[in-house]
Structures are given as C-alpha cells and as structure tokens.
Amino acid sequence: MPPTIQRVARTDAGLAAELRVAVMRLRRRLANEREPGNDLGIGVMAVLGCLHRNGELSVGELAAFERVQPPSMTRAVRKLEEKGYVARRSHETDGRLVLVSLTDEGRALVLADRRRRDEWLASRLRALTPEERATLRAAAPILDRLAAED
Image 1 (cartoon, rainbow, N blue to C red):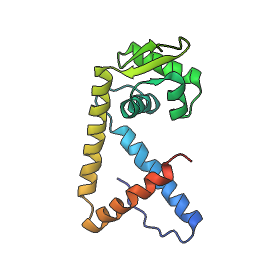
Image 2 (cartoon, rainbow, N blue to C red; image 1 turned 180 degrees about the vertical axis):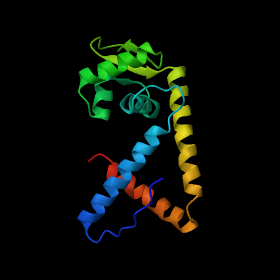
Image 3 (cartoon, rainbow, N blue to C red; image 1 turned 90 degrees about the vertical axis):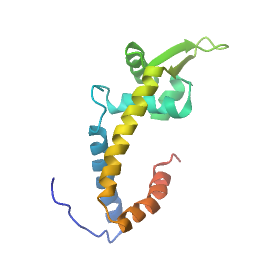
Image 4 (cartoon, rainbow, N blue to C red; image 1 turned 120 degrees about the vertical axis):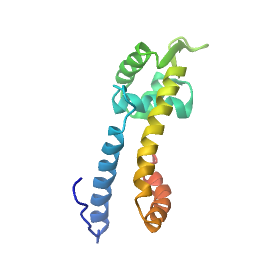
C-alpha cells in the first residue's frame, strides 16, 4: 500500500483538488470490492442500484437518473434483462413506454454487492481513530449535499 501523503488545502481550489482525488480513489477502491462472479461494469450496476432505490422506472427515467442517452440505457437494460436481473414491460396506458423493474436475482445481486462493499469500508473505518470516524460522520452529509443534483 502506498504511503499516505498528508497535505493541508490552504485554498478552496486546493481543497477541491484534494477532495476530487480522494473521492475518485475511494470510488475506484470501492468499485474493486465486487461480489465474486459479478462481471457487470460499474455503470450497469448503477442502473440496478437506481431501480433498487426508486422502484420501477421507464427507460427514459433511468437514462435521466444516470445521465446517459436513452439508446445507451436501452443497451444496458437489454444486457441486464439477458442476465435475468431486470424485467421489462409495456406501460399500461402508453404503449411507447417500456417500464423496467428489478427481478429477485437483480435485487439479490445489488444487496450482495452493497454488503461486500460496506463490509470492506467498515473494516477500513475500524482502523481509524474515534476522532477520524467522528470527522467522517460529520462530513458524510456534506459530501452527499455536494453530490446532490442541482
């Protein structure tokens, strides 16, 4: 493991750079803590997570949530459907809309994947001091606000 470099951001621009690097490194590390046998990319897993959080959605709604073009989402949904993780159906009143929902297999994959990543992160948190964990507890809602859509 590479040594940790301690820096103090003295400006907002410096803080922005340090946060960007730290968040991206943590994201990559969490992305590597995958459920064994899960060969889905992080973007496709995000689709499953979106469905788990929001319930049944149209392909267009999924595309908007994930900030991708509808044709890209259609391909992702097709891949997930082929693997048995989602089911598609026509909207009751608007036949142009396709609604997508998680299957039991998809829900199980999302939960197992989250559990594995949470366990990895919890083990890393246990190595921190109580003061460091308290700082992260205070920072978590702030980071969530930064990440929230405008």
